[in-house]
Image 1 (cartoon, rainbow, N blue to C red):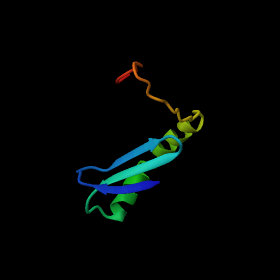
Image 2 (image 1 turned 90 degrees about the vertical axis):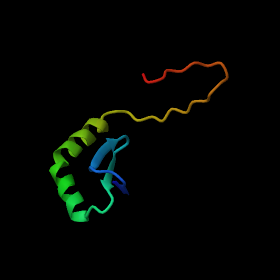
Image 3 (image 1 turned 135 degrees about the horizontal axis):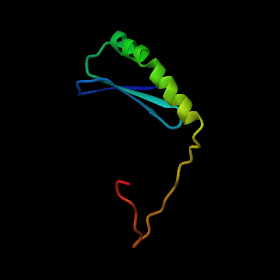
Image 4 (image 1 turned 60 degrees about the vertical axis):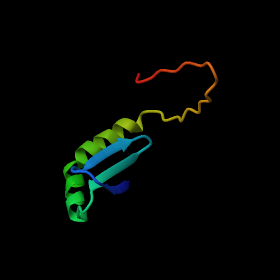
Length: 74
């Protein structure tokens, strides 16, 4: 689990491949507040982790070649 503080107003929890949970909290937020929020969202976090468990994660290394086209935003 990654935990960072930033200049923002709300807490953010994101679940990413492979099995990484990131928490971004506003500056000055106490650990008690963050722990309470994570406990509140625990079912959602576990649900997403189980969903990602069955997805195959492969990092694709791409080399940019002059003249090659690529999809942008989709």
